[in-house]
Image 1 (tube, helix red, strand yellow):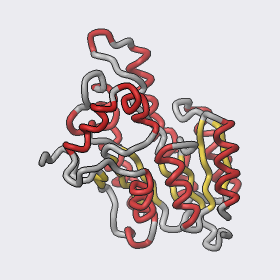
Image 2 (cartoon, one colour):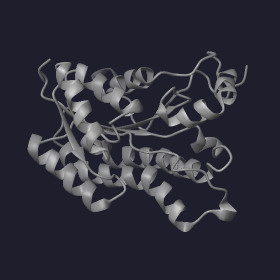
Image 3 (spheres, one colour):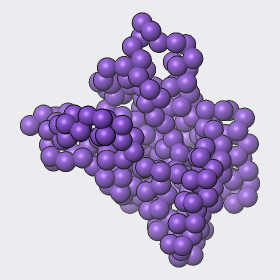
Image 4 (cartoon, one colour):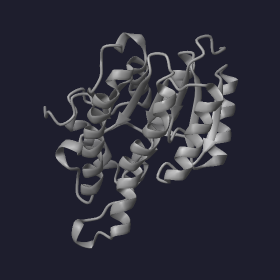
Length: 254
């Protein structure tokens, strides 16, 4: 598939899980997709897979928590294509678990950097190029933890994701005058390697999660990718400052 519409999408943290499905979906939608990650070997492999699928794809290895790396790489991508149409701030994660009493400042700063600083650094660097984009948009990822503050030891993850919820709306306010839309998705429990450890060590706990989901099953990465495809496209042209829960009715009880 050639890039018939000439549109460019950057997806951070896209060498696996939801991020790779998003890259695949946007590639099939006709975007040139630029994947970011820190596992360069996986990056090269993913580009081969996408290219074999007829998708225009590139990989840039950089750490989204490092200001200089983010600025340098996103600027290089923007300059290469002359614009950025879509920025998907997919990179993020739990970073581990820690109760506050034992929490080191380094752990606190790492989780905040991974989930919140990364959105700020990437968005700031992309804005000058988004201004030249077609139906330009930023899509962030928050979490139900941003509302309920997360499970045991995930309190700082929840705190960082609450920050993403707020910065999404703040960016939407800031960028509306340029026609740049900013929205977020809040994936529920999606069956990805993110949950691999608990799946293998406590299968009964993993299996019980679906009991708290109205639709009675876990989500698939493709089901997040399809919502992101919608948010990036013209059908969502009047949506900004929104957060879409993709959780099958998670947390509403049965």
